[in-house]
Length: 221
Image (cartoon, rainbow, N blue to C red; front, side, top):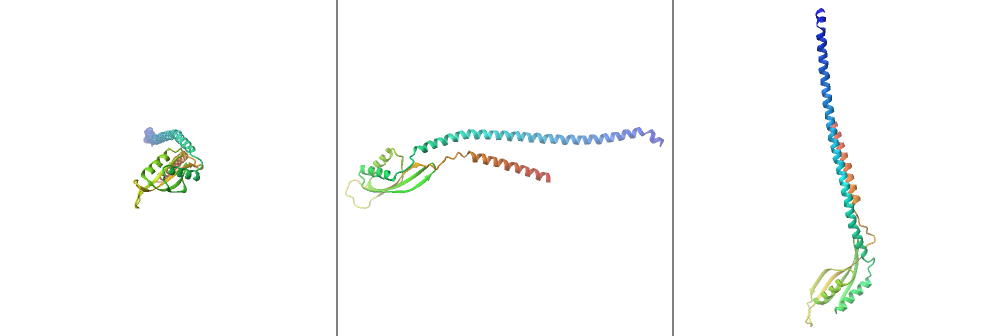
């Protein structure tokens, strides 16, 4: 007992050193853990700043695009309003027959067809058939192009007549479709911006859910 009492100070010192070692190790572990947490938080903050900047840039690009799209849409709507609000078959048939008479085309048939909606305008088709010389058809097409109405010739087809002809000018069968246009009052030019923003927000939400799910799975592992 005397020997133990004589060396008790060494025992106390040893015990203190042991406790200091344990405390030092625990402190180092705690510091390492805090350092790792700090680094993780720093990386998360950097990603958040990057994402925020990307979102900010995206909406800036959207605003710029809105201006450009709006200008284009306005020009389309202005062009749309230059078209007549109605197409008169009586007037168009009369006009086409007058053009045919002016170039002495006598055997002809003009049949109106149904309307065809094409976005901001509606096309009314007329099926035109006639027997005439190639030159007569050319002159009539020139008259159509010079007319103040917007008329378009499409689906042009010529066929040589098999029957004997007395005239020195070759008669041919001609067939084409003539289109007249009118304003489509039911049409509104779609800017498309709302859909782009909606898709972007939807993708952002899905991305967050995916990240959260991945993080949860990692924790469970």
